[in-house]
Image 1: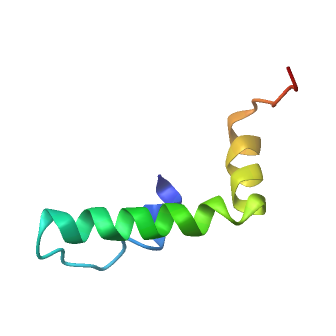
Image 2: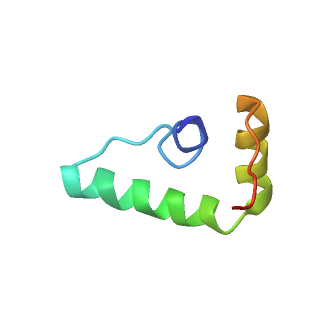
Length: 52
């Protein structure tokens, strides 16, 4: 969530709840397609992904 707060949600005055939701969705889509961001977040937790 900090990726969203520092980027897509920073310095924005939301006019409606729908505006907030729209910005969150846009930010999550951006993160979804940038695997290095997801890998970095996972690395910070100390967790690993194991294939099942």
